[in-house]
Length: 250
Image (tube, rainbow, N blue to C red; front, side):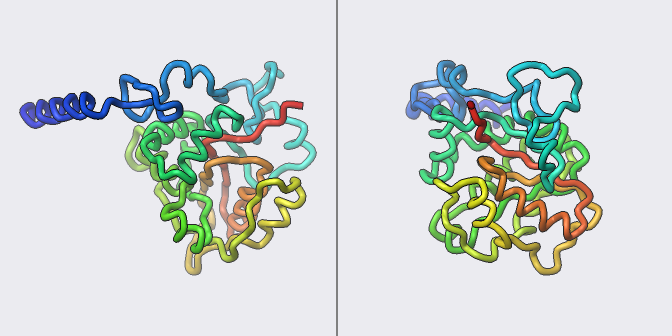
C-alpha cells in the first residue's frame, strides 16, 4: 500500500510539473487543482449567516434570531421549505456558472460539491433524496450532460458520512422544452415553466425529504414548479440547494 501511495504521489507531482493546476476562474497557476486562486476567492461573494431562514437570502445586518425571514418569504411562502446557496450570482461568479453549463469545464466540480455540502449541511442532514432539476432530453442531447445532475453527484460524493441521502437523478422529468428564462420578468418565468415538470412514472416520494439541486436560482420559478410536483406527490419536506443565486441590490 505504501508503494502504491508513493507511485500516486510521484505521478501527481510529474503531472503537476507538466500541467500545473490552474484557477478554475481566471486560469492562473494554483497550488491545488480544481480550486480558485486567492484573488478570485476573495472576489467571490460567498453566502453565509445572517440570511433568511427560508430562502437563504443574505441579510445586510443581523436581524436577531435564527428564524428571521425576508419580506418575500413572509408575503409569498414558496412551495419548498428552505433554500441555501453557495454564492451570489454576479459578474464575478457568472464565469464559473457559464463555464460549467456551456463550456464543458468540469474540473471545478469536486470543489463545487464540497462548497454545496457545507452550504447545505442543515438541508442534507436527515434528507432521503438528492434530486437534480432535470433538462429536457433535447437539451441534454445537445449539452451532453445535465449540470444540475453533475452537481448533485458532487454533493453526494462530498458528504462525510455513509448512509446519507441517495441520488435520484431521474426522479423528475422535464416533459416539455421551455424557452430560455433569460430576459423574462418574474411572472413570465413562472408561466414559462408551469406544467413543465412531472414525476417519473412509478416513482414514489410520499413521506420522503428531498433536496432539489440546481446551478442557479434567479426568480425561483423553476424550483418552485419542481417543488409543487413533489409536494403533490406527498413529499414530507422539500429543500433547495444551488451553487449560486441572484440577489437584488436595490
